[in-house]
Amino acid sequence: MVKELGVAYYGNVFPDHARIDLEEMARHGCNSVLIAMSEYDWEVWRKNIMKIAHIAKEEFNFNVYLNFWSWGGIFGGEAPSFFLHKNTDFRQVKSISNKRGTHDKVAAVCFNTSEFKNYLFKAIKNVCKYEFIDGFFWDEPHFYYLPKSAISFTCRCDTCQKLFKQEYNREMPVKLDNDVIKFKENSIIKFLKDLSLKIKEISPSKKIIVCLNPPPLESGISDWDNFVYSLKDVIDVFASDPYWLLFGKSLNYVEKFTEKTVSIAKKYGINSQLWCLGFLVQRKKELELKEAIKIFDKYNVDSIFTWCFRGAEGMSLSCSNPKKVWDVIGDVYNELKRKYHL
Image (tube, rainbow, N blue to C red; front, side, top):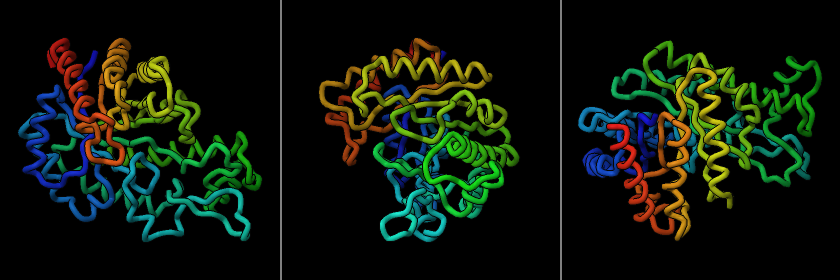
């Protein structure tokens, strides 16, 4: 049974304007909001971002979640990273050297970097003091996306090589094998577990949501069941975002990963969440969004969110007809709102 209907929100840092947008979300059936906060927002606009979250909770009674949007380049999003700009030595490294004999660094921090983890810990500690923040969203944690034609992988930095050798008693190879795949999965799991435990230590009531992107995007997590099993004691919601239109897929793709997400969440006694595509939707495809959300409901998902507010109007990710996309989302959300008395 659906309990939450929400949307991702970012790009505005002024509370009075946010109040107008939150009213619009409520009219479109939302009872929840995910505030996507980039490192830039954190470093420059933190006070206003927290004011927006407070308005969402106190004036609209929304469930309010915070997304460390694109932090370190290892969470989903387009925003740049202050940490990477200041700490290039901690970037992920391709496993195969370029022609000059040096390793290629990519624009994503290594999951095994303690300095970045401490950077996040500091932010987490600060956010946890706000009672109006209901939880945290780990958005598509992933190793750097390399093209399918790439023969190298990330990350093979000095730290990863050292940890790999300790665990497998051999040098880390330059080509992907089963041990490397497992090492990468375990690196993501340990990273998320450490962050989530820190939250639970400070504020046990805050929900923790983790969202995995399905193939063909390669996150570094191939075994979803083991992933959730490993984190079941520290996360509250398992989510995925089967954005079918981005990959030329049919709604069968949505159904496949909806069933998988919900069944794994139920298996480990946590809630499930599905994300509907609300950006880069092509003209004449808008009504498929309603069908996708009906599939979510068919499998009794607990929470439905859409990325993002107003169909990404004005962004490089804008839908062809953002107003129609937003209206379709509003129509189906309000249908579910009436159905479940939300």
